[in-house]
Image (cartoon, rainbow over all chains, first blue to last red):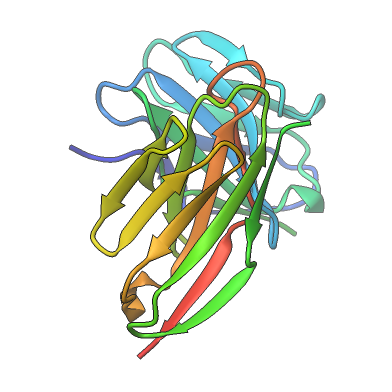
Length: 110
Length: 111
């Protein structure tokens, strides 16, 4: 049973470009969560989605960030017009009960 | 405001030297406490869930316990491969999907 999959594992963008991060949940899981981990900081919750629904986006920045989990395909975290402060590791988790995490996408903004 | 505080920030042990990591929390109505292990460059790996005071869970050299205010992760006779950052988390207000994480304890076990 494959775990949570994320791609790309590493992403480099220049300021002002768009970043798209993908997450495929574990088989049988219909809940997806996105977290951000800044250097020397803890994991911070961003958004919780079920298929075609955003359940909780209380941790999402109000601008430039969006997330979706379509009926078919992976969940996408989209960051528009990236800035250097967006450089971080972004983790996706999925759950039936406990949350299981993917390996993360490390975003570097030049 | 819900908070999770872990101590110590870093812990260095010799192989075989047992110790404990602490996670204290302030939440309105605990709905579970989770322990994870994170290796450098990887995602957190689920270890335990605890739901009520007095509950204990064990896995190999690790044992997690829970009181009304804090949780402990006891490491018995650690080995170098136990070196990692250990994270605890609790669900925040609102959706149970919103996990609040502590900053972690970085454990180093020397042979």
